Amino acid sequence: MIKNGHHATSEQRDDAGESQQPRGASGCSPEKRKRVVRLWCDGCYDMVHYGHSNQLRQAKAMGDYLVVGVHTDAEISKHKGPPVFTQEERYKMVRAIKWVDEMIEGAPYVTTLETLDKYNCDFCVHGDDITLTVDGKDTYEEVKREGRYRECKRTQGVSTTDLVGRMLLMTKTHHSNMDNPDYQQHTDNFGKGPKGHSPWTGVSQFLQTSQKIIQFASGKEPQPGDTIIYVAGAFDLFHIGHVDFLEMVYKQAERPYVIVGLHFDQEVNRYKGKNYPIMNIHERTLSVLACRYVSEVVIGAPYAVGKDLLDHFKVDLVCHGKTEVIPDKDTSDPYAEPKKRGVFRTIDSGNNLTTDDIVKRIIENRLQFEARNQKKEAKEVAMIEAMKRREQQEQGEGVAH
Image (cartoon, rainbow, N blue to C red; front, side, top):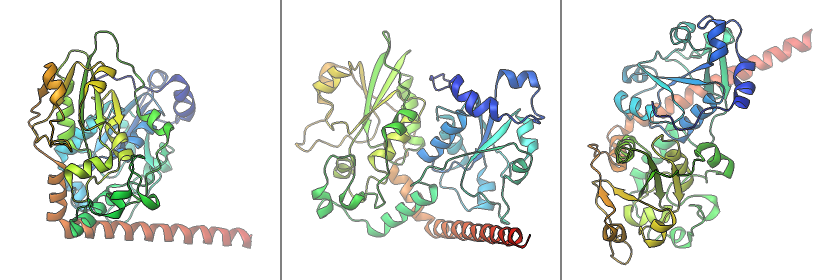
């Protein structure tokens, strides 16, 4: 396990771990509980995005050691519909999130006390959204009843359902925004288009804050003896192809300090076209920062990797994958300077998956994914209505007494 300095502080443990420790936890002896608070998270983690990463970050802050269980393709298909990524891809994506200490393959869909005890976990942590089985039952009912459930805040503005929806919308339009008036008015203000919407993602602006970036960032400066490696790109819909590439980049040195340069939305649209990027610059920043192989992110990096950038960050090595390098606006090679200095290296990660390939997966299974989204929404609406009825009933009984 790569140690990357993202462990909860003693202050966080006191607030969210030991003080909330369930006294009746049968999985750990009192001696073990004094030493370490073990947490359990589980889920599909399909199309792993910064919302998942933020949940795991919050969970890790509640204790010391985070165990994450990931469901199989068969389990997800049974309860929700087909996943976009295979279980092997999802396992690898979760392992790459820097707050994860251990990953369990094939975790059961319904979280039970037996599962928590099996992995010596004090309690499980889940977001404040609703998770239901195929027959509409709360998957955390048992652990909630026994007081071994903790909740963290769901990240607003993103979900797998939402991302699939963005891609389904994209496949219907297939237009380039280059002549769009929204595009022409777009400026380098962190991917925000007119009226607070991104002209590429088509969704409301993700409300980024400096605090959120600080929470995701390692805060570690490069140390003497570190090899500073720079890579640049869109890193849109952060996926297993990106993870495999960054892992290979990380392995290029004994003490790597990997800096990822993220291009602004309009730059990505220039060289990718259509409705790209699917995720705006803010979303892509958090997705990349959550990766354990990344030390730092340059938000809105210049497309050409020039002298100023290389000197400013004291870059030792510049890497690029096997994908085609699109020329700059003036038709020049964006990697001309690092090549001239002899610090450019092409990396073959062995994984050719691209964001385009993921969109194709969505198109091929479009009807299934649309049905899955509708089914999930219907179940959640039914659950919310049932909860409201129960509350009204309880209030009515209270008045009667």
